[in-house]
Image (cartoon, rainbow, N blue to C red; front, side):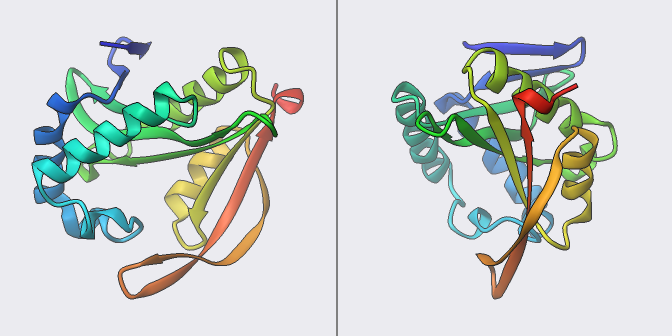
Length: 179
């Protein structure tokens, strides 16, 4: 299994089909929480749904188009992170993530995004990393800012989540501007 250690309690592992049941369990416990800011919980409900998602993500990884990993905290799957898209022409990627509600407030996502930025710049040789968060999702916006990203603007009508249409705050960091 492809894994990346972040520190002694946190690691990333490229998604694999055996993770599908863990994702179903997380979703069944926290669907309402996850559905606040994410569109996918309404469409990905079963173990088979997650297996198909994982298969698609592994194909995209093999094609160099994205990278999707499970987040392991103290040996337990607690969420997911990704390079949602990797654009080799523009040398840019957009990161995404979700985390179990009971693991919020431990600095997990900040450490994960910091590691993803490092991987983007030093392993994939990209020049820019972006993060899009719903304008009102202050926790995700704070992650971007803690990771040294700069607000580049607000894009209106970017995503439909449930019955709401959300505006997104777009953050970015350039390799040349990284401390």
